[in-house]
Amino acid sequence: MADHHLTELWNQFVATEDSLVFDQLYEASNKIIYLNTYRYFQNDSERRDMVQEIFIQLIENRERYTDVKHFESWIATITRNKCYNRCEKAKKQRAKMMALIASIESSDMIDNELEGSMNKEQIEQIIHGMKSKYFSKILEEHIEGYSNSEIGARIGKDSEYVRNRIYLARKELEKELKLRGLM
Image (cartoon, rainbow, N blue to C red; front, side, top):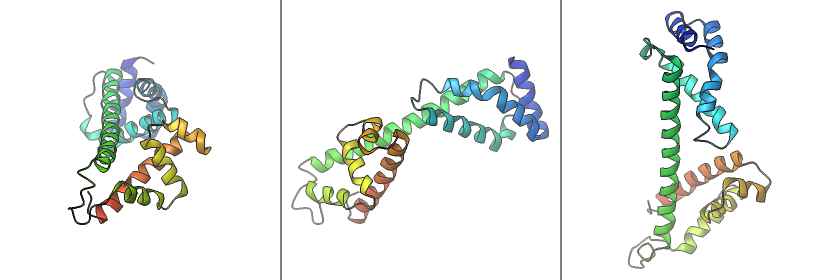
């Protein structure tokens, strides 16, 4: 579909908030967004999630985007920025977890003079004592450097499930470490 037609559909949707116009716009442009997510995400479900998130963002902020001139380049820019931000956030989360693991293994963390400090074995006990039987196994293998796909293959689940469980396990571990005064 030509860019000028997509631009007209967007501007018509912003002016009228007509759901039928939005449906036409979605059908005509969701593939543009999807294709722009390829360089950022290997997983199809992550790409589809990103398409949905971008359309939600567009709907919620439509009054800010009232004078769009070139829809395709505009939506490609929004997609690129949103994908980049998500990747950076995930990268920071991984770095935070790796820093936590490194600090646990360092001699500074296991300093006996620090009251209330925990050693590596105590951290491992927290991981093993997590609510879900999968949490500890998944988190251990994630820390060891296995990919989500590799972990999924070991436990009979898909990588999306593993990604979600790693996120939940990190949150649970973080909460427990905060309760014990380590974070």
